[in-house]
Image: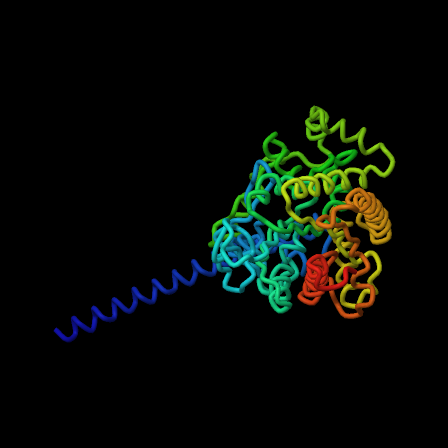
Length: 429
C-alpha cells in the first residue's frame, strides 16, 4: 500500500512538473509575442511620427486600456461637440456626477445644483478650454475654479464657482454652451478665458490636409465629420490582455482610411457649402479677429439680455510677454518639434510664434471694440490678460499653453480682484 501511494505521489508530482513546464512555455511564448508586437508597433510609431524611441514607447503605452479613461476627452455632443463624462478621471482631475471638474479633491457634487441654494451665494460659471478645466493642475483643488472659490471666500464673498471648462473648447463652443446650458443655471456671473484654441484652429486645416480651415470648427468637428462621412474610424479600445498583439493584428488587417491628402476627403469637404463660405469669410482682412469678436460679442449680448454678468479674458500664452524659464523653453521647443514632424511647417517655432502673435493681436483688437460697445454696461467687461505673467520668472507653463498650479492661482487672483472691484470692494485693474 505504501509503495502504491509513493508511486501515485510520484506520478502526481511528475504531472504537476509537466503542467508548470507547459505553463511556463506558454507564458514565455505569449510574452515574446506581446513584446515583439510592442517592439514592431514602437518602431512603426517612431517612423510615422518622426520621434524618438522613448517618445514612441510613451505614446504606445498610452494606448493600453488602463490609460484609456485618462485620455478620452469626453463623449460626442451633437450641440456642443463634446461633453465630459460623469465620475471619470481626466489626467489628474476627476468629474462629479454632473460631468464637470469639482473644486474638491473628492470630486463631490455641489450641495444644491442645478437650482440655487439659500444664503444669497454668488453663482459663477467658468468657461474655457483645457486650461480652464485644469489640464496643468496637480489635482482638482488646484484648478482656476477651485482657487477662485477659496479666494472669494477668504475675501468674505459668498460664492459658488462651477468649472464648465471643456477640453478643446473655443469661443463658438462656449457660445453654444451658454445658450444650451448656462442660461438655465441662474448664474450671476459668467467668466470666459479664451484665445489659444481659437488661434490653433485657424491652422487646423494643415493637420487635416485641407486648403483652408472651416470657420468655428474645432479638431473634434473635423473628426466627427470624417467619421460620419466614412472618411475615418474611431479608435477601438484593445483588450487589457495581449493588448499590443491585438493592436498589431488590427493595424495590419484594417483597411486604410482617408488621410489628409486623400482625394476623397477633399472632394467630400468640397461638397459642404459652409466650407466654401468659410473660404470667402477668411479672405477678408483680419477675418479671424472678426469671427472671434462675433462669437464673444454674441456671448456678451445673451448674458446681458438675461441679467447675467459677463467677463471675457484673452488668455496669456507663452509666445508673448512672459520671459520663459529654461524648463518652459525646453518643453515648448520639444513639443513644437514633435508637432512639426507630425503636421508640418505651421508648427515650426518661428512660424508658430509669429502666427500666434498676429492672431492674438487681432483678438485683442476685437475685444477693444467690444469694450467700447459695452462701455455703458458695468456688468460686461473685456480684459486682455496676455501680460499677466510678464514679471513672473518661475515656471508657469507646463507645455505650449497649460498653466501649473501657480499659474492657475495667479489667474484666479486676478478674477477675484476684478469681482471685488465690480462689487465696490476694490479698484479695477
